Image 1 (cartoon, helix red, strand yellow):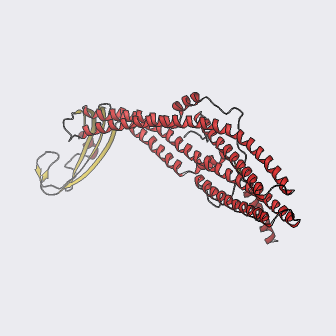
Image 2 (spheres, helix red, strand yellow):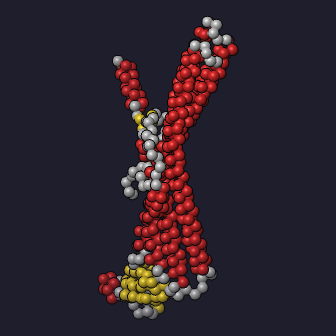
Image 3 (cartoon, helix red, strand yellow):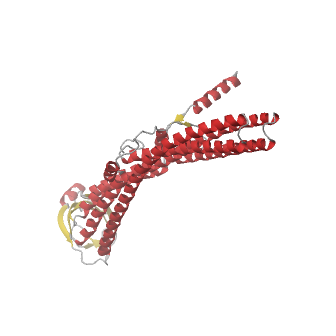
Length: 443
């Protein structure tokens, strides 16, 4: 009974695993959630948030407290009379001080501005990391769909080829086909058998790649939805509208624009080092002394703390004169970094513009090709069925049948590939139009 019970549990578990079917959106969401690159970008965003808080806190006063204790042996200064004495004494002091910058060439203000922009840029960079993972999953997912389709096509043609071989052997027995023609049909059947094994191997490699980009264990068993997005009758879109939205809202453009803004603040902060720095400071201190030999020589602890207490407040200004060209070097480096950011923004703009136009044109092209491919498949199937019927009656040769079968196989493969390519480009156009690959909560 125990063995039967365990067998039932194993079967149930295997069925539950086998029943797990994931859509492309679910695969992308899983990959984004478990991606290592996305995790690193989350950590970078957290660092940017902490840098912003640190920059804001730099405007607040810095407060510190101190306490010290010392013992004097032999000749020393009497803390009460300020004269030399040989009495051993013990003393300790207490202090509390604070300081804050009043003006530093707007360096602190520009640091806060730069850190705030860097924090905003971190959100865009995180979205870019998510989008890249989703794009990779989408392409590999389509590869799995393609090879699943080619395996099915190869199985159908192999089954048909085996039936043709059976008919050829029968016709050969009747004397209506020669042994050479039967051999040609057998070679065709072997070719389809090889093709099926090849496509099954390609499918296995595609599954491995899909699990890799999803960052899931290779032994995780799941299946994918084999349906694709229907190809619309009118596949053309307004390239201008998609491009206008992408250049203003795409995460890549937002990140590059924020980078230019951030480096402008860094440049302004570097130039602020040429201005004087004005600081305000204040503090309070007191001390206590006692005589080891006669503790009644000095006043009590509380009275000394009260009587020895002193306060101060000060205003200081530091004027930069010469610092071994460090300020000049920092200004030039910041200016060059700003120029590089501007060049990077121009390059990103060109890349996004090219990607948008290419995606729109390819979606339109693949959409038109798909309807042509469907017609080609129907025509090739009709031609193959007609030649197959003639072959069964001994009216055509095996070479003609093989040519028709190859044409049908190529037409079906091209149709499947075109449909999947249209699906990818359609998702890319939707992405540049503002529809995200994966919807996630704002972090």
